[in-house]
Image (tube, rainbow, N blue to C red; front, top):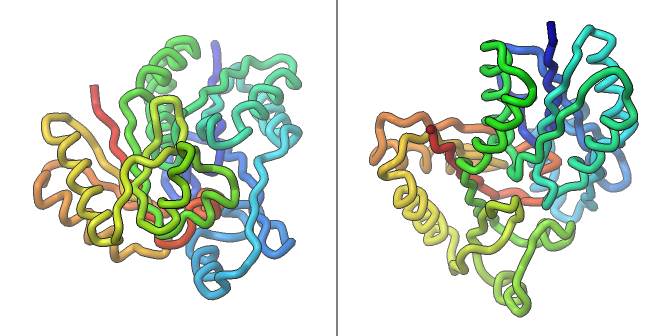
Length: 283
């Protein structure tokens, strides 16, 4: 009988959540002023944002999980008796982790590795992990799980409101149209994750308060006739996230709204003051 394991990248934020199935997490590396930290293991979200706020000129960069480390993770699951692996990773438009996870699968003999490009990030990845766990428990095959996850990822929508584009531009994580970047640097841009998994500008807004109002307006327009669950990913602004949650619930009192921290490696690109809001449309 097949035994299916799950691997997910730390960009998902699952380290901060409780899962009812053994899931192995591969972590990216955060570089602060030349010192390396393994995401979540060596530095938590709270510690990271406190440091960045207190030291605004700190040098920040990130690197994806080494392919060899991912291969070792697959090998460890094989040693534990797993016959198959579902590996769920951040959008290939945002990181090279997908390619690394695929290469690692080719390096390990004797176990079937199915790598899923989530075309998402943060809690969007978690939604796929949760569904994979549900399907494994119901006895579905890897092929059935893969098909379901590829369909499910189309039902995930994410908006991102950043306080500054400094971090996204510096690290090359923002796709922008020619001539748009200069004006974006002067305003509070509302961005979103496209169906292809890229992060692109959606609207140009002049103030933080108006940007949050517009974010709430867009969200409520999209979910008003849908069965959804919502998440809010916060950085150093938990109280703002709570306020936004209350506003969402005021109009949609029956839906689930989860508050989740944006893990340091993702926050290194988004910056402090960022709020991400997304939802899963239930089928």
